[in-house]
Amino acid sequence: MIALIDYENVNSKGLKGIENLSATDKIYLFHKENSTITISIHKKLETSKVSKEYICVKASTKNALDFQLVAKLGLLCADKSEEKYCIISNDGGFDAAIAFLSDYNISRYSNLGCAKSETHKIPTVEEVKKLLPEHADSAEEIAEIIDKFKTKQAINNNLMKKFKSEQVGKIYKTLKPLLKDKT
Image (cartoon, rainbow, N blue to C red; front, side):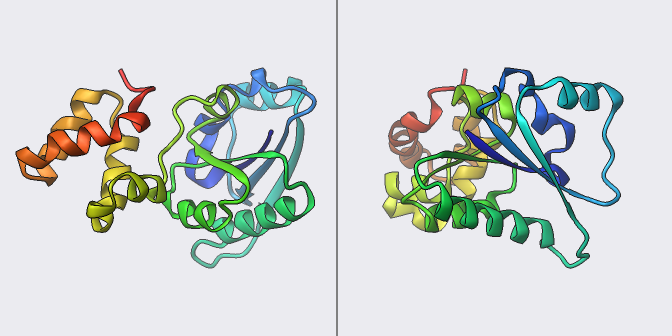
């Protein structure tokens, strides 16, 4: 597994589960010059067997880190096409790149532990569009609801706020494959 971490977005929470990674895994930690890290997280990073590369993004333009992360992902995919790639970020903007590179095994997770165990995968807008083509215009909002809420009940309640009640039952039933890790 190769993980590209948007540290600006997930901070140390994105490193949760690093102790479960092995020497065959690799992380690229994208950070800004002024990023901070706690001593306890630093110790976990240093004692982890995972191969690490720190990439300091010095450009100050908006989304510079995101663009550099995606550029690195493209280079890695070209070099090692069979690898499993994970973007560690809560930023749904990466879903467009994941959809574009759909021939590769790329997913987005909120932390390394979820990526390693392949749980709590954040649904992409493309996955929602594929399941609900008739609601393609609302796919981004639906994906955000699934990502934001931990329970199926909360997801259903928030879908009720967005759609007519007679639509929600059908939408919820169709989305079930994306909700298997929810309680």
